[in-house]
Amino acid sequence: MAVSASAFFHPWAAADMTPQLPNIIADVAEPGKHPDGTPYSRISLENTVKIAEQLQLPRRDIEITALAHNVFPERYIRNMHSLSAEDQIKLLQSHVAIVGLGGLGGTVAEALARIGVGTMTLIDGDVFEESNLNRQILSDENNLGCSKADSAAQRIQDINPSITTCPHSKYLDAGNAVDLLTGADVAIDCLDTIAARFLLETASKSLKIPLVSAAVGGFAGQLTTIFPEDKGLELVYGPAQSVFSARGAEIRLGNLAFTVSTLASLEAAEVSHILLRKDSELRNHLLIIDLLDYSFERIRLI
Image (cartoon, rainbow, N blue to C red):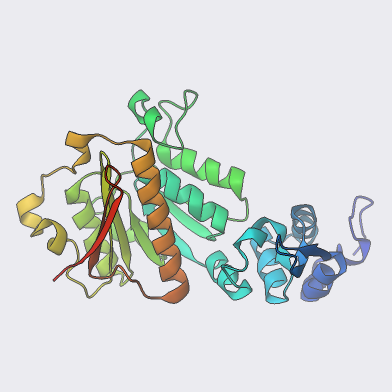
């Protein structure tokens, strides 16, 4: 196969050089040092992009191959020491579904994009309005009236094009929930109604995937994790039938940006723990925080 004049590294412009990918990565790897002076081998974003384009491979494949050979993509280097190369590979190979892309969901999506979760299904039928501007990280004066799902997908692509996004500008309901969540390793509840949370829990259990659920109201918020065999939301809200028309506390208490971002960060951390460790300290527990008195309390749900 002829090599074009624009080829970056001419020996591997041909498709049949894909098996040589580890060697190609090694050729462009450079030495780096962590802030503490620990040395590492790195591959830059520029070289990652050029290799992916020339071999016509997804960027994520380049990153995973590099990590498997102890060459760290520079974009993830500040994850290291806290996360191993194996952890980063696992995140890149993971798939989450975020349901609700307002205050909680937008910030969760951003955090997971930056840490490197490889595939995200993004579900929300709403559009941005002026009242979202106080706390929803994806909203600005230029995208009022725009789809939250599409805006989330664009934001994630702007941050990290290695990530596959699957936006759905529709609301979750009993008829579409299972189809929308299929393929995800974890479902993430960023909804604002209790009824929708129960629908999401039912679909997650039917697919045998864990659900991380958060809610915010005023200065306070809560977080829990539900595995398929757990009682789950009924231990928090009571039987589904008794609260099916209820709204969350945010209707009465409002939503503050710092409370939303705090809960979203905790939710993103919990999702990462589950993806990497397959367990949770919040399973059958409810974490309750109050930023008025800076209290954090974890209670057991029985």
